[in-house]
Length: 601
Image (cartoon, rainbow, N blue to C red):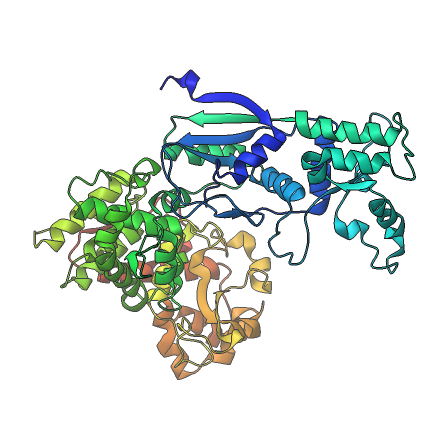
C-alpha cells in the first residue's frame, strides 16, 4: 500500500457514530486501558459540542486481524462472542470520549460506580453569559443526581426538580429520538405559554441542531503492521502510556472458549495473559513476577530454537508480533519446566533471591533455552558461565546478536560438544567505582556475588541475612555501609581517601534490625558490639578480611582506612572469582592510579 493511502481523514455525525458503535461496527482492543469517567469531564465534553468546538480526532485502525476485544463499553454490548468480519475497525484513541458520549446519551453503567445513572439531561432555561462563558455548562448539563431533590430533602435541587417536572429539563436522548413530543411539552409549559418565539424553544431547537449536525473527526489508518501500532499508540495516547508488544500479542492470539450444543467444551480457546498469570501463581518467588515482556521473549527464544521454520528469528517487536497461539501451546509445557529450572538455578544454586540482582535480563533467555528439554544440566559449568558473563570487563550480553551467540554456545555444550571459555579479563577499577546508585551491570554482579556468599547476620551469626521467607519486618535485608557515609570518621577523612564511601566495596548485607542498631556510628565503636569468635568466623560470608577487626581491637583507624579496606575487599572478590572460574585464563588489570599506601596493602 502506498504511504499516502495509509492515513485517511474523515468525519461522521455524532449520533451516527454512536449508533454504529451499538450496532457493533467498532471494536475496542483489550490493550486499551480502562477509562476514567468523571462527571465534570463529561459535562465539559458536551459543552464543547454545544459550542461546536472540535473534540480532536478519534483514531481508527482498519485491519483484517481479529484481536481480543472489550465486550462491553459503559455497560453496552459492542461485540458478539463469535463476531467475525473481513475488516475490523479498532478504536486506538478516543475510548474515553466514546464512553462518555455513549453513556451520557444512552445511559448504561460506569465501572466502580454502582447505582449511578450516567444519562445526561439539559436545562433549557440556562442562558450563555457571552461568547467566552466557561461556567454555565455546569448548570446546563445535569445528571439525575443534580436534579433529584429526594422529596424536598436536597433544597438546592428543588428548583431543578420542578423544571424537570415541567419539561424544561430534558434527557438528551429524548431530544434525539422524541423531539416532537419534547417540543410539544415545552411549548405548552407554564413558562413558554405557547410563545413560538420564546428563547427556551430556540434553545431546544439549537440542541436538536447540535445532535443532528455535529460531526466527529476520524483518522483511519490502514495497511500498517501490528508492531507499528505500538509506536502509534504511544505517540497519540493522551495519558502518555506506552503500548507493550505483549498487549498486542495477547489480543492477536486470543481465541474464545467455544461450547457445543450439549454445553461441552469444543475448543478451550487461548488467552496468553491468563496463561502467564496462572504460571505466576505457582509460588511466591520474586522471579515469577518478571515482566510480561520477559515471558514473551523467553517464549520467542524457545520457539526459535524448537520449532523449525517458525519465522521467529529474533526477540524484537517485529518478530514477537508474528508469534502464533499454536506455537506457544506447542512449547508451553516444556517451557514452564525450563523457566522454573532457570529460577531455581538463581535462587537455590546461586543463592540470588531477587531478579533485581541479575546482571543481564538476557540470562532468562539463554538459561531457559539451555534447560529446555534438558534432563541432565551441568550446574558446575552453568555457574562458570554466569559469573564469567556477569563480571567480564566487556558487556558480553547486551544485545540480541550476543544473545544468540550465547544460546549457540550453550546449545553446543548441551549437545555434548566441547566448549571453551576465552580469556577472562577484569579491571579492578570497575569494582572500586561501582556504586549501588548506578544499578548497572557491574553493580548488580557485585551484589549478586555478595548474595551468593550467603552472608550471615552480625548479631546472630547463625542466621542467614538473605532468607527466602521473612517472618518479622525487621528481619528483611538491608544494604549497610561498613564505613557509614555520615559517620564522624568518613566526614573527617574525606580528603585522605581516594575512593568514595559509596563504593559497593563498602557495602554488606545485614538485617534491618542490625542496621538500625548501627546507624551512623564509626566502625571503631559499633564493631566492638559484635567482636566475638562467631563474628570472626562469618567475615568470609561477606568477603571481608580481618584487618578492620584488627583496627577495632587496636582502637585506631588509619587515615586512609577506607582505601585500604576497599582494596582488601577488591582482592577478596578477585580471589573468589578465580575460584569460581577455575580452569579459565584469568587476567586482571588496574586503570586506576593508586596511592603508595595502597600499593603495599
